Amino acid sequence: MLGVGRLSAAEDAMRSARPGDRLTFVVVTGDPAETGRLARLRIVDLIACLRRVFAPGDLPRLRLVFDDTGSTLSAAIGHGSADDSTELAIRTHDGLIVARADGRRAGHAVADREDETAETGSSGPGFFPATTADE
Image (cartoon, rainbow, N blue to C red; front, side, top):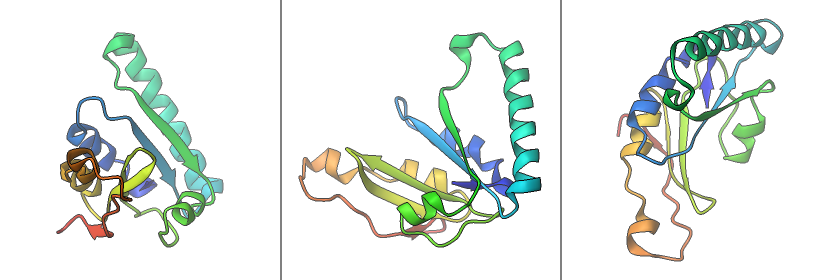
């Protein structure tokens, strides 16, 4: 989940992703009426430019979601309210959150985190406590 002021962190998260990872970026803002609309416009413009330059198979596959309220995803993952400076990342495995990080380089932090349930074959919840990217 990235606030519009932290959208540049999407590049870091994409570079840190493991092969085969499916990435979803949720864009949030404290002002959906103005800042949210401007962010949508810029992102659509960027995608149009990328499609003209790269072959379809060369474009990275990702999902982009706009959370106009800034609270839908936050509430679902147990995080406080989100704003323009939010940078929060989670890693899931079999529908469970196995890693989360909040703050700068959060996407990189969860990409580096080993998936304990996949390695041990544990049937437990595989839930890591919340961390910050500085850990």
